[in-house]
Image (tube, rainbow, N blue to C red):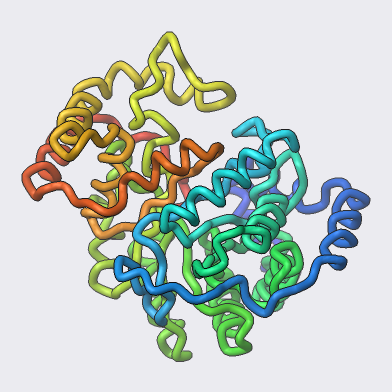
Length: 382
């Protein structure tokens, strides 16, 4: 009976996201020699109890549980991902320049995940983030590195223990003894409770400073918030896709629930993977899979891009991308755009330190209402 139940659990999960999970399972077991070499390298790095120093930025946002983060962060998906972003080792220097520029500009939150590294190695983005944090010259800034646990089917049989083991592996790659923010990357469905207990265990053990979830629907968000609260663990955030071209969190109750429960939204893809910067057109598409996503959409957003440019001009010459990020912040979210170069990091940071008017926010709300939603993660709707 137990084996039959286990088989049903695994099949149900695969049925929800067969491609994603299968791909990530392969990634988790790829190239053992490469992974062992990386572990050997990490063992030679001096380990720090925390990656943080002190900071006194009055503009910091306090998450449930007390962690103080900048109003805008950096998403590290592109650092290490070869399949979607075309990363290779020659880009490491540019990524590190982007990290340092972001910190110097007042950004202290960097979000990675153990699955970020497709094509280069499981957790490679974590390794890079840990290295960049240790080597960052801005020693007076509190650098916070968030990462995420992948609820893949191989972890369903002992979900509670799986969280602890994966966390220890992430800490090794990060080169630290405590994670600033540890999140569940997507729902675990029938075994959610085990993963939630694993998060709470890590918090109680002092291995993480705060915990969060990602791609959680309103119903699941309320459930995990209640379960963690019963153990005295605050839920800091729900990381979901949120932008002017993907306003689903406003429609499906997620944003309202986050606001009600004091759970902060971390907005990934806040620039719709570059569309809202205005730099792409049908004749100038990005490389890789994004080209297929953008091909039939870029012309459609021209009126919205015009509104972004107008508002930017009225606010001291801000770019379309900076206005789009500021819109997220005006909505109470913390956007975490990617940054593949120093200039991109500086451009993103230009979204901080000012706020558009309520009328300008409403104008963008209206301008973005007519668009079909950009594709999101299916698991976020379950």
